[in-house]
Length: 272
Image 1 (tube, rainbow, N blue to C red):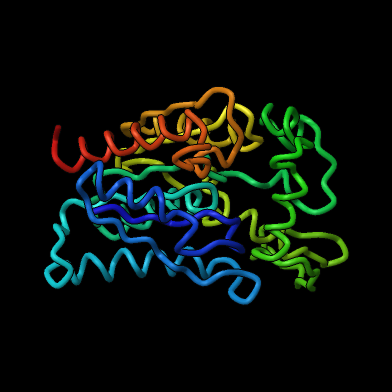
Image 2: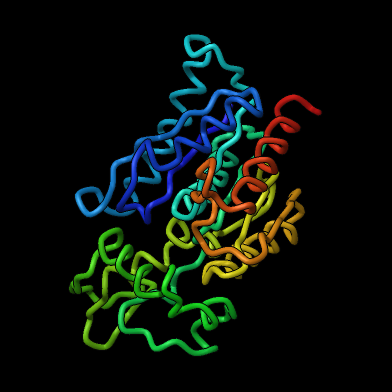
């Protein structure tokens, strides 16, 4: 069984967003797919969507008999925002003793600290070359990512008491909601306290995507911690290439991605 956390920057989309991929996985990998209709920002800001997905995973496992699924053969996956949530959920699963076959992260947002409102990009605050190369491309610019975070993380400034209990302290006691959230590993998975003993991972990135390098960096963090990790960068395509799967006008790389992921899921769930 595969859980799919949809894309859309935690703000847009729905069950139809990933329906084509889900149907392909059902047919090609011979698995059941549960696509989680999590609550979205701004009505339900961070971290609601993440815990909605986690609740769905646990509910399905605990109700496996009624759903006619094998609770010992579960994978999770997601695209973009869904990739970020899949990364986080793998940590939750490890910490609660739930064994996953695979967690798959497709063009994942694993470190969006460079999207902080008012930040002037340079190498000191953004080590990812892909962000510097593609921050102003028309198909997925930095401003688009900042728009999503405005609604998911908030766009306000609040007061903080200046105490040693707070990890972010300013002389005037002001802290932006975004900055506070982005320092939380549940928002920024590269900051997770431990990467050990996580489920096998597969990370997909796109060549012309500003989030490319952060996804690949996250894969290296997993690998250095001793986890099984595979990665594939799809050449010549933008961030959302996985959605371009129209049967007549779709991208060749999108169909390649469908074949690759179905083959991988079939292998991990049927030992093929």
